[in-house]
Length: 500
Image (cartoon, rainbow, N blue to C red; front, side):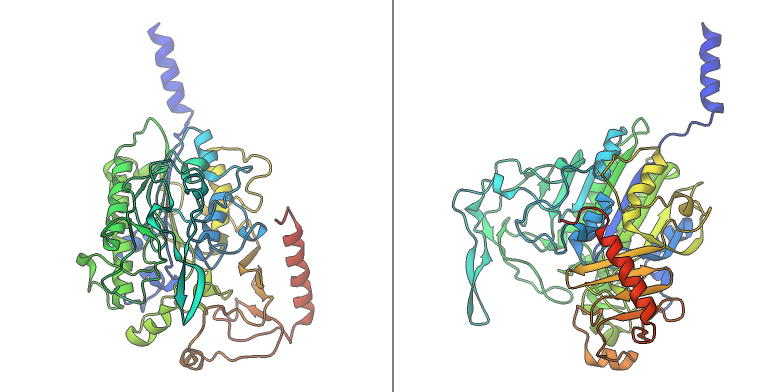
């Protein structure tokens, strides 16, 4: 009896059957390409933990979110699908869910393969608020610029039955556990755990103190009394650390940690104030970096680090305050790129992208191959040997060989979009913008003048990123055949699959 058992144990070891990797996606909010110290030598913000993560894995310098704004990029990452096939805008306060119930999300796929799954942080993909809304409850009107705007005042705290579970959130889409505040600047201002509000909001939001930079950008609505915006990121980080500590090697896990930082309101905790030379936002990025370090330490302390695939990225480029940051502190959150959050230019969607998986992903490598967050779905599926269900993740490309350093990117083409009024098509070295300008966020005249950007009267824009990565020279009028070719390609991609 003993000999066959020993033989089976030895056979299991020698076949090299590896345990499936744990998966951790760390997702910053409104963090620019140039906010990562490892890729901006002139950065005024220290990011030692992220720089170390880059040195221990591969840093991708041509990596993109799906959109220049929050919700669409999160949808695309978790669905492996271009957001514009369904919608363009963000989920606003008390809007319904946008994830597709008929398709398999990434956490649902992982759960089917035996993974423990958790989302801790900013959700911003909607909930079924009608399930707890009291009959007849409507948002109040509000005065704005001398005019009455219907519904702009937000809901009263008693508009909802906070004792009920809220369907449609993370637990409805493959996560075993959720903890967070949904969206840091949207009501309700309260802690969620799984599908419930922990402490019911009883008062309208009050913001008595100024933020460290910019405005509050906080929508009106129900709030827990004395809601502390400064405590949000520390609390989320503590909960993420605790969740990791409660895992074991007996079951693989997936942690999706979408940070609320460095998105507005810009509220760095007291211990981080003054830790950068880029103002309040810079301090908030330092806090973001510290959160990354704490998660990496939790993985190390738990004995998980060697078999965990860690991805760090951001949902889009930096907010418009980045222009003043250039002038006031000499820090370029967008790095050398043109554009910010919302824009079709590279700075709107080319984001930090770091991948670490010891023994699989080469350490200390820098790759300029094209990759998208949409590709994480198919890449992770390949890494764990999961088959993608038919009809799901139709826009995701398997980039596992690229991550391993074994080849080129699996994609040559990528579509950028923030709203229905314009698309950006990346194909090889070329970018076609199907709008008169790639600018959506207003650019100060002094910035355009200082950086040599000029207005034009052409119907679109065309750039060669190989020779002109900062998008100065519009070749739309010089290359009509290429414009025609890329326009046709864009329409072909948009037509593939059901556009709803």
